[in-house]
Image (cartoon, rainbow, N blue to C red; front, side):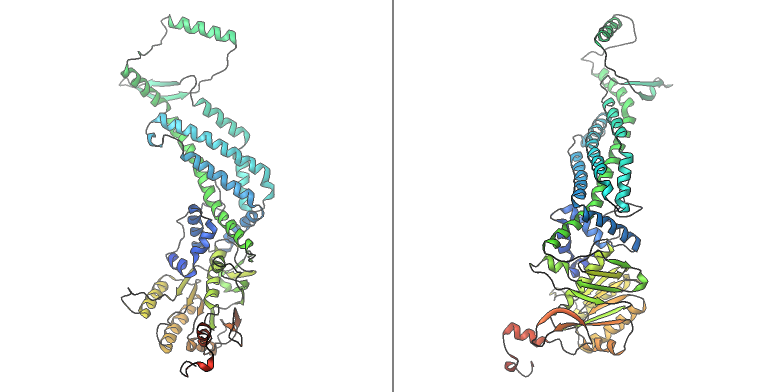
Length: 514
């Protein structure tokens, strides 16, 4: 029994594909806000969503496979939540069964397996009934295949047969088994046989009593163990163990198989539950989202309308300003402009949207299409650390060295104020050489920078694969938090911030500040 709601040919695992730079992505893109919103206070969902988002997919087909499943989930959220609840209930009820510490005994193993399968039958019946009622509503290949498997393998005849076998394995009429005598006069090749029990009519019960009474007074091959014969009881227990051990093992394996199915169902539905939780929060804020269009890696494309930082939106009461960008065939996007104009926020919005798209999710935008990348990397400026044993530039170079060792062609690198810890000339030259080398190895780069020499140098080269954005600033110094296409400017308008913070006019400022 396979679920296949995350991949079309294998199961999803929490440990598969999480990149080595996962913690850097979480820190720089503030992804914990996203994960908490998707988890809704559930630690299990927190682990699932973190793993699914960080271990993004690398091919269009699998991304689209998940997107189709997600569309079904968003159209019928209550049905999906009920499916998830059935899997959770089955797992939690199995945990509460006694005897896990006595499983070395075949009797306890058999008893626990019978009880577990009895509980699972109830869960399987709920699952099958739900599928019978709602399966025709779903259109994705993933759900249709799952529902077809459930209908095929959990039919009425199968469930009734399982119930019958479980009733027989309680051995209401005792155990019937056969064995051979080994050369050392021990029993060998024990085989448990089915003991048919049928209800007797009253006169048949009288006949049975007469026969049993006659046997007790005859010389038939029967014996009774004295109630005080402990050794005799141990011998009988040993015989019973030999007879049921294979059945107990097989039943335990069957129970584990069904439990495994419910665990995988819970795991894979957990990702879509996280998506539904996030969707509810965005709908409540009237924030837009869309199913993105993944493009081939070779297209080197990034086009979006109304993209916004979903993590910022989740942390604020107001809606967040969105941005538009057309980056078709643009391997380098340079973002400059006014301080506190929304540049870093935009950079995070692109990084988060790329991760969400490649995990099969919707993205926070009106429209979004981008080429699939082989990995997302970030190099953001860090706050001062008093414990640092070397300078900030050394620390930045060290982190960049680690990225260069892991990054491959087809990856996406987000740079935020990188190498601004040194002077303009030195920082620009370091960044220029690194960016050129990355572009040559087919790495896409988005760079937020105040290094005018760097940005202006790229602009003057009239690079056909470069796109330049600038944070909008109105004449009165107001920041709209929108990015517009435009050439780099030699100022970041820090004076506007000074005036706003200290409430002074430009004519009151010292000449050195102006």
